Length: 320
Ligand code: NAP
Ligand code: 8YV
Image 1 (cartoon, rainbow, N blue to C red):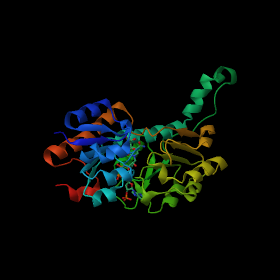
Image 2 (cartoon, rainbow, N blue to C red):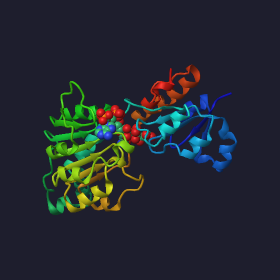
Image 3 (cartoon, rainbow, N blue to C red):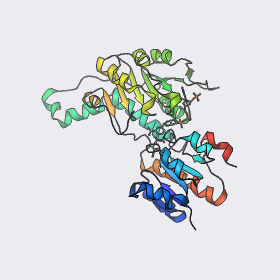
Image 4 (cartoon, rainbow, N blue to C red):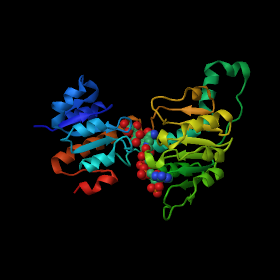
């Protein structure tokens, strides 16, 4: 008999096909009566899959007592209560590395779109202004810019490598200095923000990084400064960000993630110095295929070999 798998959130047709071959699949968004499911079919569910957007509601984690593994379709797993999972000996896996280049490209895309005022210029033509009003004002160069990275892990270092191609002066802040890094380490985030033009945020979400980007950090970036966030909305104090942009104390922003997705503060819609994307950091066909394959692999390997490929660090002691 195939093990039961509860699927939370959106997956690709390729993932659905692969899951159907190995599991009895239940789609959370197709279950009419959750309570009844949790008390009946749910009791045989041994695996779950979810994403960085959806996570696992605590009630489901508590009531699905046969679950042995949660395979997260994404690298960031702040939406899963990992401490609770570990306390129940549930293994959590994620999809590191296969999305590094895509998310790094998204960060650069946002930085460039902000600096070169891509959306303003595009709209200028579409609204017929070029022929009527002439050229738009000059914009800002990314080449040679001083850029600070908040977070210098797998994706942070991929961003740094791409910024090298633009001869940017790259520095970083994290809790730990990386040995042999070619980039300058700042133990203090505000000091780095004072010295750079753009700050790119690429830490995990969760309690330890909540509101690391404070009003003080944005003041330090200043009226010519640019904030790009491709990490999690929780890492930036969003109210302070809106206030700093409104007052002109922060120059511009490129934002892929928000505090209460899919809600985005509407005042941002009116700002030409802000570029917004709906959490699409890894959202290409190619990268989502690689992430989906790894999400499936972790589950299939667990039930066929008792092993997983990419456990989250908190669960390494649970896997052989
Ligand atoms: P990673 O390899 O674990 O790197 C995380 C980095 O953040 C490390 O440099 C870490 O250094 C630093 N960090 C952690 N806590 C910190 C703190 N309190 N203060 C300062 N720095 C801290 O993770 P990754 O694979 O690069 O992924 C990073 C995150 O990107 C994910 O967790 C996810 O939230 C986000 N993400 C977003 C998208 C998107 O679609 N927008 C896509 C993929 C990932 P130290 O431990 O030394 O502090
Ligand atoms: C995805 C992400 O949006 O990997 C992450 O942490 O935030 C993104 O890649 C998501 O997890 C895909 O469902």
